Length: 84
Image (cartoon, rainbow, N blue to C red; front, side, top):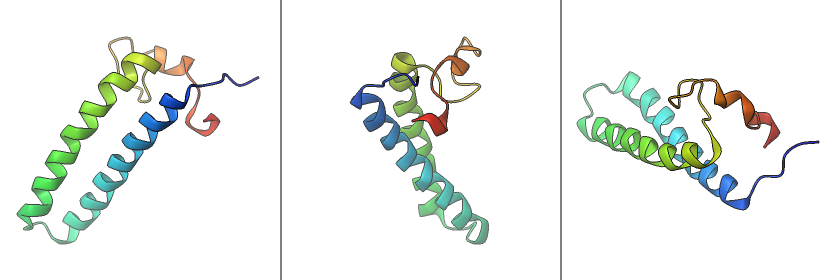
């Protein structure tokens, strides 16, 4: 039976995913607009924001990335992405 996760898990994960989506879109945009300094600045800020969001999430719920924590093997103990 799947592990029940608190609502906080989902709200924090949704925030991380929204930032991650914006990062992906900016990366794609910058592929065709490499001179756009505003977009590059936005990408840098969002990358920093993602790291800021990941730290408390991973401390509380474990890593969602294989390289996310000091103990690289704990990521496999949480739910897999398709289980949440």
